Image 1 (tube, protein in one colour):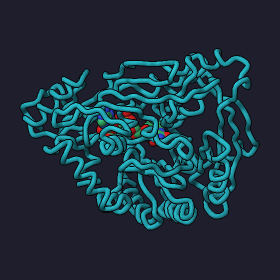
Image 2 (cartoon, rainbow, N blue to C red):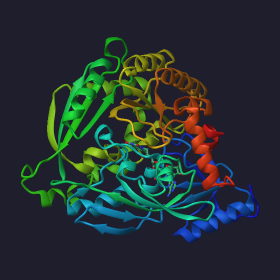
Image 3 (cartoon, protein in one colour):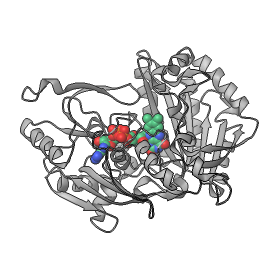
Image 4 (spheres, rainbow, N blue to C red):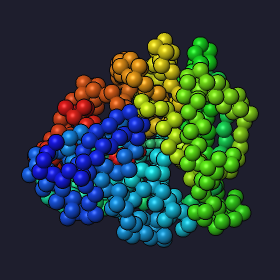
Length: 468
Ligand SMILES: Cc1cc2nc3c(=O)[nH]c(=O)nc-3n(C[C@H](O)[C@H](O)[C@H](O)COP(=O)(O)OP(=O)(O)OC[C@H]3O[C@@H](n4cnc5c(N)ncnc54)[C@H](O)[C@@H]3O)c2cc1C
């Protein structure tokens, strides 16, 4: 550790899944000047800097062992909001929760959100997050009108699709490695109700699962699938699909009421149990056979078709219903493995992936599927196809086997023309990254980095792993 930096800043940080840990000097700047000060300190001390939003990446994206972490969660102000145009400008530490609470009462909703509302705008742009509407609305970057950023060189820049376009398309998706977003301007989506019309139905195997995602997407605003990672054979890939659409004018008898924040928020108790302690009740189910039984019950319950109206927040942020649910995976934490595959190869590749997880005795506890379309951001993870996110429980006994299995998955996915998402996987190697991004993209990214960060001040554990 660097003795010239204040000892009291030394903090152990974790990834969202609690499967990784790293000690860093943590600074919490409140503006561009203080960010510049941290860069100066880094240069003097010879340490690398990683920016951190809410730390909700599943992997090592905002970890920086032995270096400096710049936590921007306190730069979280809404700087301007125009309810006529739906254009909002905010500091990068504003969370999606802060964003939707600001805009929904005026009839707007963020065009793209992640499965948790705790993420920050800076983190969302750096990873170029996708929502359950990726097939229709693209990633969040397509709704950014402009951003300001501070580069490690000290330069303050403004980027839009028409101004500094190369940096616009590479800082968005660039894993926080080219500069620091200091303000972000986004276009919101106009809505006429605080509710969505939702339908749910079950799918008996992987083929019908993927077919349903493909066929239902064009007629809906959102499509998402739950995949039961336990059964094999004829039931491999079975699950449940939920589709949703915005209500049209006149369909909601009381839109002013449904758009109130208090009618969106998740209830403080579920079945009378305070949300804050619910994850303790999940602990017994971390044993694989018991979790398999829970999944079967969920699948059977989903066999009756559902049709209901649901607040936007409840539909999107289901995982926030049980705060700290990830702790139920135990002290080894969890790893999420998300792969993106073209629609032509997805079935065969995921059949191989799921079968391998059964053979190795390491089934996935939670699987989520989505429909995607490509985008033109430099480090894009999207394809014209689908994604499958698989959550795995990590234990000391399984860590090495898990790591090997995920690397074996990487081979299957890259051979099938697939891609990966830098906010999720923890095993992607530099070789795999080059394989799916292509050498030309890797070299373009490196050239941009030499321009914005000639002294290589910005580095994270993720960056060293995939671009090392
Ligand atoms: C329960 C859950 C559900 C999720 N669902 C989805 C989903 O549906 N779709 C999806 O796409 N993702 C999803 N994610 C992943 C998540 O959206 C991303 O990992 C996101 O980047 C996390 O934002 P954060 O603010 O926590 O950023 P962090 O994890 O802290 O950082 C992420 C990256 O952003 C960089 N960064 C942060 N702030 C700045 C800044 N101001 N300037 C430059 N770089 C910066 C960091 O250096 C890092 O590389 C989910 C995560 C969780 C935990």
